[in-house]
Image (cartoon, rainbow, N blue to C red; front, side, top):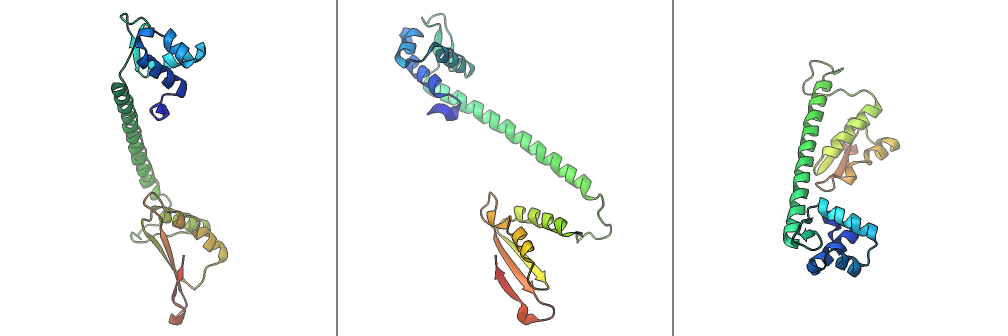
Amino acid sequence: MLEALGLDSPAERFYKAMLAHPEEGVAGPAAITGLPELEIRHGLDHLSALSLIYPSEQQESGFRTLSPDAAVGLVLARQQSDLTAAQMRLAASRAAAAQFVAECSTLGAPRGEPDSERLIGVEVVRERLSRLGASAEREVMTFAPGGAHAPEDLRASRAHPEQGNDRGPVRPLRVGLGHGDTSGRRALPG
């Protein structure tokens, strides 16, 4: 039950037995749980590492258990601290990645075209479309001059938009545009 809090099953059983029988030292909970000596030692080490038990000269067992509400609060506070540290590392990674991309984006980019982007080669176009699709929130709309796409282009375009992102699925919409023939203009479902 407490594995989500970092406490394995044998250590949890031993902790509960220590709480239920504090006057019996380590021998009582060991007999009650029926755990082998190695698992008991591991459990005591684990409980001590999590600060759920601590040394006590006043207790016969040599250990004093932390109350369940204090123990859970301590473990959750530790997990929150770990999560905050991970979020800070992620934010630093994102900032470093954005700086790297900004520094590298001007390398090899054509000058004098601030409102456009030039992509050369099918693979470069597919990779850019994949990045755009991954960052889309609700819908990806493609205007296709010249009518229908080649089957391999359609397969590549379907690789990402339908899977969406953490904000939900993204609806694809393709609009085929014929050469001067307005009757050829129609919306094609994703």
